[in-house]
Image (cartoon, rainbow, N blue to C red; front, side, top):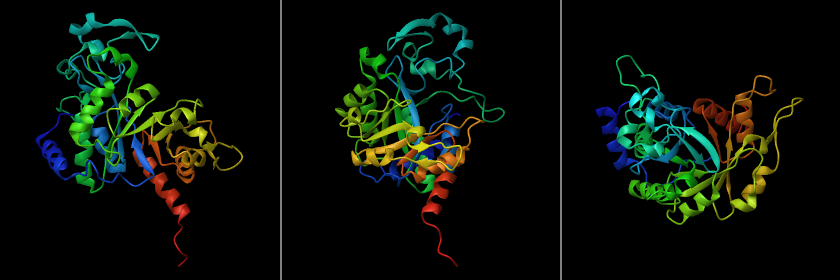
Amino acid sequence: MAMTRRHLLAASAATVLAPVGSSAEPAAPLIFFEPGTASQVAYEQAIGAGADYLVAPVVLSQDGALVVADLELSAVTDIASHARFAARRKDKTVLGAPMSGWFVDDFTLAELKTLSTGPAAKRGAPPPTLLTLSEVIDIARAGSVREARVVGAAPRMMAAGYFSGAEVSLEAALARQISVAGFDSPAAAMRVQSSEPAALKAFGGLSRARRVQLFSGRGFGLEGAKGVCEAVGVVENLIVEDDAKGPMHANDFVASVHAAGLAVYAEFRPPAPHEPHGARERLTALFLAGVDGVMCADAALAARARREAADRRNPPPPS
């Protein structure tokens, strides 16, 4: 969706009015919206539904722009249908693994902006294009003004090691963008995410924004996270036990991580049809377990679960 004059005016007002720098972040527990496909419409709808942070996977274009996309473009854009880019399809080795396709660092931002990321939001409107991190920050700021609450950004460094040979590293480009936007503070509504400890460590030497180390599966190592980040993002089954014979219940994972001085964000994935507990019940269980936030593709569902957990913890007095 193209930025209309109304959106630009809102973003401009938000730049002046929205809290930045030393501002307080949203109150925990937080909802991190993870879009299936990043778009202005999806982000704005998530903010309206209650999202506190907009997760934005970021990579570097050929000319050094921070683009919200995957490293390989065919899964998130229509690049395969652009005949003029056919010759740029390549075979590469990415972090030790072979990969084929169209890679973001072989295209300028102007070229990337010609790609479509999905159908138009309404008839006659232009199709959505790839966003830049700067545009996502503007969406968050405009949402802060519109909703009268703080909405932050959570850039997720994608394959940072792949860009290590670039003229400007992904970590350096991100640190500079965060500084320019006024979020270079531990108190700012900015959470930088990565599954690569080396990338988070390098970023920490360039910026004061808080960092989140992501762990996949059960490969969690608390000792490795200390000194690299201020929070960890882990799969939900490390936090709650899924017992088919009764309600879901929490283990001591959150307490142990909190004792080490780190926050805990749960990575939520919708349950399979055969699993005994539904999505809302699972999300509610995570909030009741004491997590500091959840990362979820359905902000409205997460917001309902957060309210339900709060009501269970603090039931209204009997009338």
